[in-house]
Image (cartoon, rainbow, N blue to C red; front, side, top):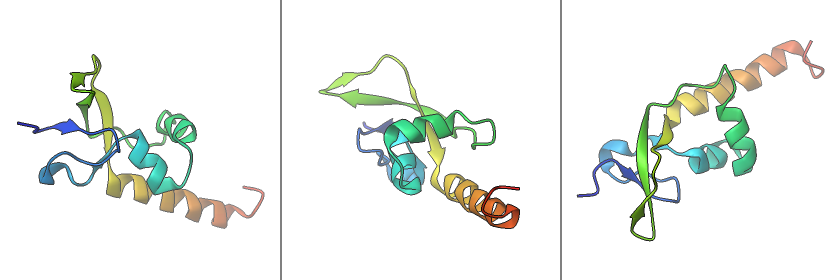
Length: 93
């Protein structure tokens, strides 16, 4: 049973997990590279991971569970950041 095992594309493995995204999914949602997405997920103001899932690679389980985030929370975080930038002006002040 593949329940609660995320695939490498950042897409959920089960219908219950459809709104959970990995770092790769965060990159897609935010339109940034995976490296930049990883940096963003480490920010203090970034949403906490919803849970940690094991990923598979070539039928082998990676040793460490990987964080996954709620897609809606990531989208809301991005939206709030854009709003804050607009309110603060182009220079962020």
